[in-house]
Image (cartoon, rainbow, N blue to C red; front, side, top):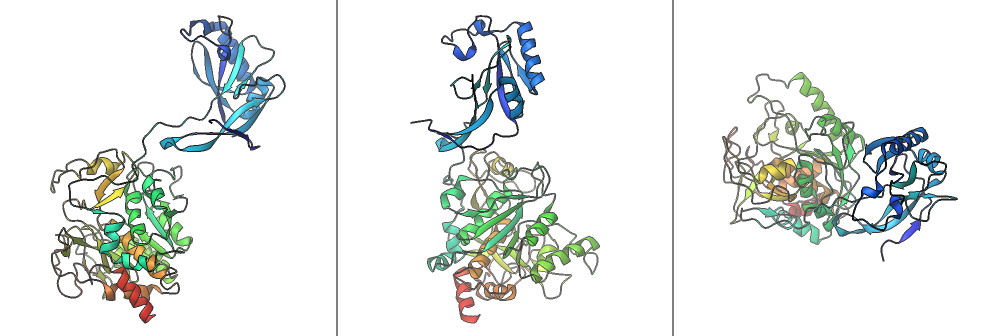
Length: 495
């Protein structure tokens, strides 16, 4: 039977919200009302309200809103204790919260000599202006959380985790117990929202670390980080995700470098990044820009610490990050309805003009096609930017139809090499985990992924580079699509 009350002995919060009931004109206190057909008898005259406010302010409370009956206040517990002569005590109530779930929620009460038995109500002595003080009780927003199961849409797409795991050869590894257990995968992105999808699957997610001061670790205004992170778990369901929100309050990725350094400093085994810059291609100078060189060294330092660093190859972008030696650059392969593999024309691919022998991508994940790469059904915060954008048609240079989801359902079709990077990060977690080889080096891990990738011989990559896929390694897809099961066999055989 609700509520079940248990005193918890915990101190009250620093700021308490409440309501002051001024003396009612009708002579019956609001807390003792038995008839509710009219509020008029409970109005207080102006002089009474003024005296009541004066008394509350003198006790140290702040008036936040007023009505003809009384006013709301906030302040420290000591102010309420000064006003009532009692003390503030906390207790737990088992009640329904978001999504109809039952949880114990902390409530507050005024206790002590002369205080009423009613929970959350305090009496005021030595005043003719205030008839009661009521502490505000916790409320839950009556919102619908996104469904844990993805919606069905007619547009061709892949579903997580099953389709992604199967096409990347991860299902075989998972059946052998290679789930990425014990491996921390750090991800720097726009934020991570606690979508019901992650809870349903039982994935391990550490508390979100924020980089931009004042930002909320529970929010992801864009939805990018939330959605793309699901790709890690599709491949490595036993891994632990450690997320670094590097976006500002609007969701713009303003502190990616700071996020990378914070993540690097925490020494994860894998560090995945679905972002980058965009420079002139071909570049005008034989050396990277001076500002990029600093960044090259910071990333190189992470690789030299033994961290598996993964960066997206880009969606038509030409950026410094995926070219850096030792970084795994994640490119794109599209698997169509007939399971035919072809190069994604949404993904970047080229020979590095700055680092001899470096080809972007190192290996590929699953990526959609132009115009918008609407390919993977991914969980996101309801009503976020991606939720709205993907549900609408696009126009301009690359017109496209909506993805078939609603603009507020917490699901959307998208991909890009932003999806490939966490997929490859998941592959790395599998190879490094308890079912793989915990002592594997970055070089050995990369070798295993490259040597066992499925060759792609059809299609071209992004029109900016327009490199064709062909037999063997190429500048469109590198060695091809990652095959996690075969890479695991390679590791166990060779290292």
